[in-house]
Length: 77
Image 1: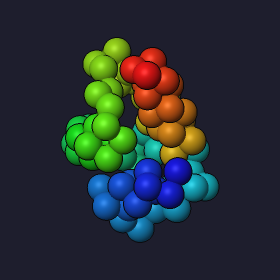
Image 2: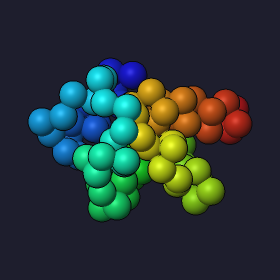
Image 3: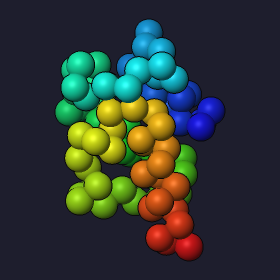
């Protein structure tokens, strides 16, 4: 989770990602941030986020993003 929090801070700083649970709903992250985030996640976690997983509920919180990463990694194992 620490690696993900670092990535999120690099995409858009000044946000307490550990506490926010509505990153998309509150428009903290926009579509460009999500595109950048997906690229960083793919590289850092050696996964490929499939298009069907690029939905708001998977990016609304750091916990949701981390759960998606773990699910994709398990599916690819």
